[in-house]
Amino acid sequence: MEARAVAGEWPHGVSHVCNLLTMGFLRFSFGTMSSGKSTLALQIHHNLSATSTGLLCSMHDRAGAHVSSALGVSTPAVEVHPTLNFQALAMSHQAAHGALDYLVCDEAQFYTDAQVEQLALVVDELDVDVYAFGLLTDFRGKLFPGSARLLEVADERLELQVQARCWCGNAATHNARLHDGIQVYDGDVVLIDDGSTAEVTYELRCRSHWISGESGPVADRFKAAG
Image 1 (tube, rainbow, N blue to C red):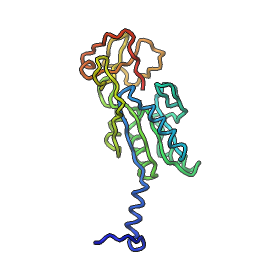
Image 2: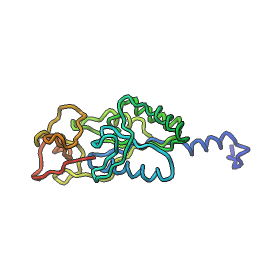
Image 3: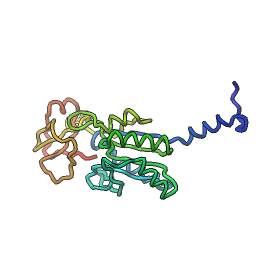
Image 4: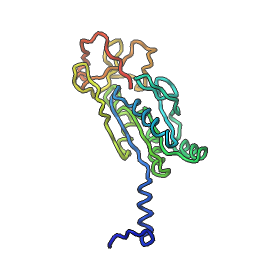
């Protein structure tokens, strides 16, 4: 069948094309600590908020109900808790403000499977763009459940190209947790490094040195932050 350019002769096709053009997307951007995730989340929110309406969200941020960057920039955000429903949040914002164009979701590795699926429904049913940011793996080298689900359902999966380095100079691929300078592989997954617990620090390492637990000869090591 020959394609027709006149909308009146092909109404269903034109409508379908228009729906595709307005469809939202779910993008998951991931990286190690210090790869610039929160910085990019703040930048995207800043740029989009100039011409559209949206929400900035975060969970377990070191600054509380904010998205904060290691560069010192911080912006108030919706604080995500395990019972928050993103569909209800999005619909409430639409009802109150007449529109919702985007969600920027930081620390998404901590979201539940149900919350990630809610984000997908916000995209598909409300045509909202969702930008999710998070770590892939925890200090044990295992995928965060939220990140695993995002990899499964996201429209786009992007590894951030601001590449952090291990103390040896190789690319850092793992986030190591140290207690009193000694790497540990067991413990609570959620332990926010807010500086109040001096003996617990995080360090970026390549796979080899993450496996061996070997620390570099740097006396004042960089304390990693997202």
